[in-house]
Image (cartoon, rainbow, N blue to C red; front, side, top):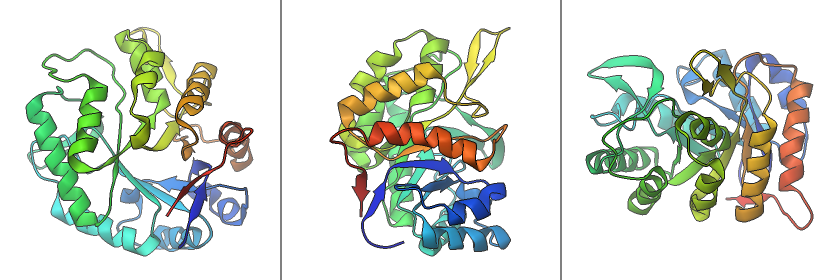
Length: 281
């Protein structure tokens, strides 16, 4: 999709919703996918290319392992670049985490100490990725479940420094902030009030679940967005203005019409009096 694109609130695209997604004409609607599900080609890639002809797309990666102690896999970057060239997404993003270790892949997005050494390594990995992909990417703030030792940097300062060194954008996941604040005992509102507004290229909203035995909230993406998260989102938009906002739902996926209903709640926040959708080239 070429030209200027007005992005409002989007939905994570699921295969079972393909026909409805293709036909939907809601204003400002866009879709996000994990590129790893399409990089091998086949029928899924064929229908993703059809979606891309009708709607803006965002690619949200889970496998670059930017916080690993090694360079990003060049073959993975090559395949991702090929997909980008095929579907021309308006946004590309990755997680601030690691998932590979000495050639082994783990099915989790794992945390790391925010040391100055990690900052230099991750900054280098982001720059290598942007150079290979031929475009800017955005980095998502992680969700946390336990206190780690060895931090030299506050998380927001760490993210801000990554943007300064590499020119990357930031994907602000509001549910991650709420979950982490509950689990680690900090203020979610203070975190969001300090987050660098100018770097935010995308926002994520999702539902969480509870582990009553451990007293933790889990970033499970299997429920509706909770009211405290909506309240944080409204506060954020009032401060930073409208940004492309994705409703994530990866488990207990409801009918497409129900997702559209939840998406409409985000769209109403973005399209309030005097507010215009965010336009990206």
